[in-house]
Image (cartoon, rainbow, N blue to C red; front, side):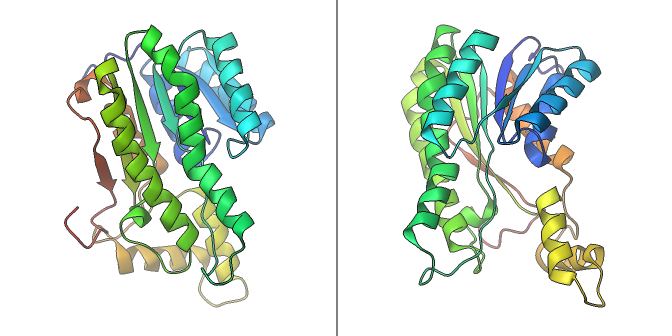
Length: 264
């Protein structure tokens, strides 16, 4: 299927690892020029250089902690300077949490609110004018199945991702008249480095290995019985970025191997 994405420009936050990196590479494979944004600037630059070499597109690595308003401003400025315009924004940066509501301080709530929600708000405000100037665009917000089906140990993550899902719907209604399509994706179990690191910590000194631990999580939760690879997830992102998904507006898509227990 020809996705008609060649020579588009995409900005991907959290783009140097995991789902974000897989999306950046998936878009580049289709001829999209990419700005890979991450807190670790060296890794972002290294991955951008690898993408450029592998796919023959323009790729830029940009250091930015999108939980910080000043970093978002600098990121928008860098994108304008290096890329000129933008067609696609992937708000992907994020990470899990662990706390109880009774014990978590305000500062922790604020950090995840800024990282998962306000980064998407600020980047949309900053980059939508560039999309309008090019006649339209696509914004995809990476939330989580936890926005609908919460995990008990990470209430802040659950709440902030649920807010991102609602933001996506509201922004979609606001921007569709400008030919900018906004959608949200709620992944389930995806085998990112974060999952591997967590599994190693939880199984340290125990008889069960970290791989077996993750296999059991998948069997217990996902009817498909396994984790997705980041590349499997990226394929869906790339399709939604394309004109082939032109009637997909304001929706939330669960890509979870059947994990969601209710009708969404």
